Length: 284
Image 1 (cartoon, rainbow, N blue to C red):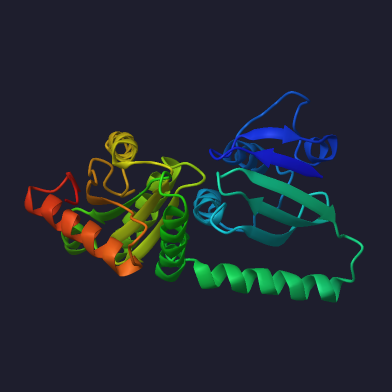
Image 2: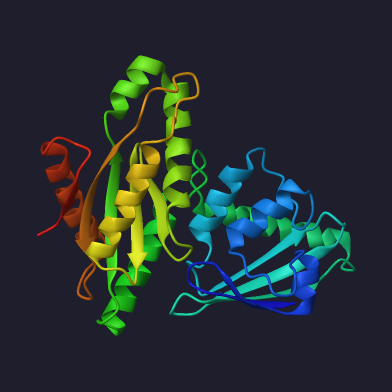
């Protein structure tokens, strides 16, 4: 089966085999998250064994399209197994191909599944399910190389920090603090494109990479996310409490190193915090 996704994750083409397997009408072209949510709700298509589907989806989106080639195996609700390969092109388009491997001997299939799980764990933050520090920094290094090769293609890096997070822990406890980190990550991820990269640096600090976006586009995306977050309660037992963030932005340059990009964005974040929090600052 074959499908082609655009950089935003919307299906541009899907052959009949793909449409049968993923329950798509002949002319339907949803984006990947919409398709996954619908099939999960109807208990069909890929099996998602994670207790929290939205956390699984956020984790999947944080890795999808971030490497040139991704190979995974997944089981389907009808009992079949698929070997899926996703090839990501420099412009962000994703080519999806899959083969039915149900007839493979089960021991071989389980060994390959265990390999896939180990690879995922190596790149995932265990609390939030998004990219961990090592994974997001490797992707930043890739984006620096891409900008160096094609200086006309911008990438904006953003370091984000949850405002007053220590007060959240002190007032509501560390369990609530962990809930905030998970909900914050899901909310941010939902506001990003498939091709955008998002990872947790540590504590309450996160990094977003906007390939193909200059700082103006990145600022507009962050403003939309902030507006969305203002309508959400991230602490279940305290629905009136609202969480905000500060952000430091910088443009990635071809001559950069990972540490140089991070240092500039971090200085801009410090300026945003010093200006009163809940603000964005662009590195000079």
